[in-house]
Length: 506
View 1: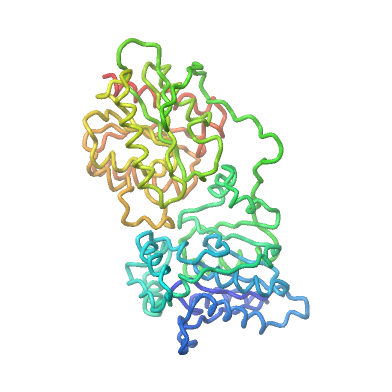
View 2: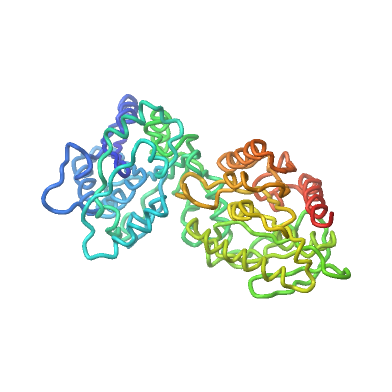
């Protein structure tokens, strides 16, 4: 028999686990939802300030109350903020813990407070100011009924359940968010499981892509002791899919789940798949953070600036403008008689869109200033997570921007990115795009969370009468140039490029 100890996220108490614990108990397991001091009504705070260590002590108390002498496995489950006290307790009781389940949450690190994982970037910045003070006392008021979306997707949570969640919500002691998590590494050997709620913005395929990029902080996710599950729901699965969550927890305790493939770091990497189309081996002309690929043609030529996706870890080498995909796009543009330009921008985290946008603007100015470029005929082409960087250009298209294109883009902030009020929201920006032509390469086998943003963009384009041209790759995946057979992608790439060139030269 397995014993589950579950810890809830910000503003929520043990009550959120009720239906999940009932399901677990019905299967013969033991389940305990930990009441947290200063949050749960049954565990009021005393005279001392409540901080992260207070909640770690609450979880340790629950662990110590479990009799594991009969060989029962003890599984700790942390949702949202709850993973911080879970990891702190596991670090102090490593011999008692059989597995740690990360339920739709980040990967806390030693010395980093929970505020680093707060999805709302504006609130995160305000809390960071509080963290710099000597004592972070006080409380953070819970959201209103309409404010939960800022903390994660409420998809599938019924109106009645959301009303109850709001009524029972409690202020979060600030010290729980601003006190750094202290870990010795004692619990690092415990198997772990990540449960990803895909309607909150992340699925296993996206995590695999980040591992493949070589982020050293994510390499451990490919350890065979780490498994993953997906739940097609929002950020509060214990409220929206309690039975399915219980079933996943039981399977996680049994060691089931999907495992990631490790990135080949020690062995020589396999040669990257070349760009699907045969393109001329033009040399690059490197200028700062921009590379130009110039056709052999007379006079200033129109240009296409290709904007890579992300976030891309800061230490990844080679950098995106040296990736075969970006080079291939730029040389393809040059083969069609226009200048192809690539750049590196600093989108290393979802909080970096402002500075990445500045890098793109600077790159465009550099390209337009080059005497080989017709400054009045420029197109921008965005890929993947770089799609959000299209929003400012859609909002105020300059006269020289003749076309905007995108390949398998993210076209609205994912729910767990905390960008509710961000200006980087292409779906919303379409209302201001006017007659600007938009060419969109759509992957037929896109990940669901990204596909939802694309469909929202298509719907908005119809609503606003935007000049949207869809170019479908029916069997294409996200990153189809390197993942899929060339014969699947060549027709769409040719079609999209010729459309863009037509808008530039017409």
